Image 1: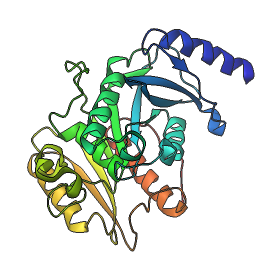
Image 2 (image 1 turned 180 degrees about the vertical axis):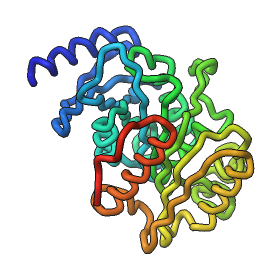
Image 3 (image 1 turned 135 degrees about the horizontal axis):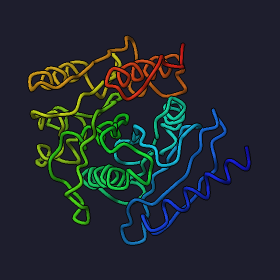
Length: 293
């Protein structure tokens, strides 16, 4: 086992040298022999933003695999990439390259939701641009996240503009599909976050930016979510389907905001199971889900 991990370390070191200018190897995850490593995808002054990648245990060199990118929640104010680590390890065990994306937040960096969207788009572009070296299929990249992180995932697929001026705009940031956990999708006067975006809400609100060609998505929402009303989820689904896009809306009875996290295991497992089926229906996963509740 140790020798195989050393070999993977060497391979990753060779692959990433020259891509980001820096390679940082994170502690290997021991669950299901999933391997992890960390790379810098963006630097703003002295701030380095990183991606933590989890690889399938049986990954082959020079292979192209589907990937899923997770953005953590926290109201664009705080949060940690560790929120979706259980999800990332699960989908890595199912054959996907799973990625936890860091981004700037108000508490840590004094930034706005607009900066967070720019970072999310930068992360998606970095992954697609370097997909070959990352062992990722550039046409099978899924964006995912919860709450404000769900907003960022949706923004990469729906919002036009708000790009980082340093990004290579010839590379698309649009995911091929979206897995959204009680996402903030309405930033309008009656939605979440309006106090922080105000009159600019039309620039950043996914609900107000839906157009033809939006990626297919699965949307998980608790019936007792006090931040994201069920009616907002239903309207999002209605508007996506009106332009020919797929939206599988799952309402979980008697569940509040953040119900999908690991601490609520039955709900975590059920949402992961349904996300697995959704991704399988799109051809990104093979076989039956390996999780039950």
